Amino acid sequence: MDLAALVATTLITKCSDALVAGGTSAVRALLALVRKRLRHDTGVLAGALAYPDDDDRQVRLVEALAEAMQRDPGFAEELRVQWHAASVELQADRGGVVNQFSGHASKVVQARDIHGDLSL
Image (tube, rainbow, N blue to C red; front, side):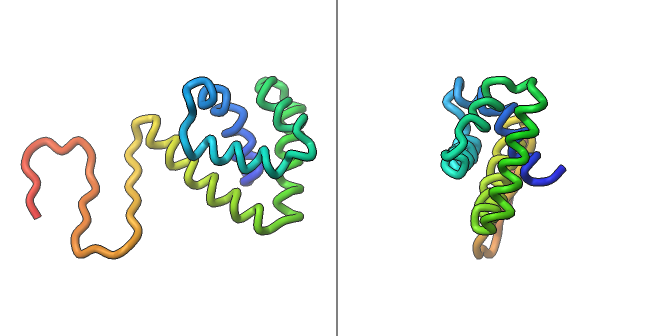
């Protein structure tokens, strides 16, 4: 599945839940980015979100995102970054373990469900 389809599917399936529950920050940021980019054609995004089972509306959203990405490589890169953040957040939200570290450190421990002592 290409990035446009992944983003569209995530927005369609997760935004109604996220908006009701206050949303996750990364999904909200992804939605805000797409809204800003498609502001000239708000019906595409609004229609897909309002009717998540409508395949034609989903296809129109995927096509609009793909076209916007092709026309603007900067938007495409920003969308990739936001998609990555949202996908990590959604994985963690389902109880998955997501370990991320960036920077410099002499010792790093990333763990989940430790039972017993931990010594370094």
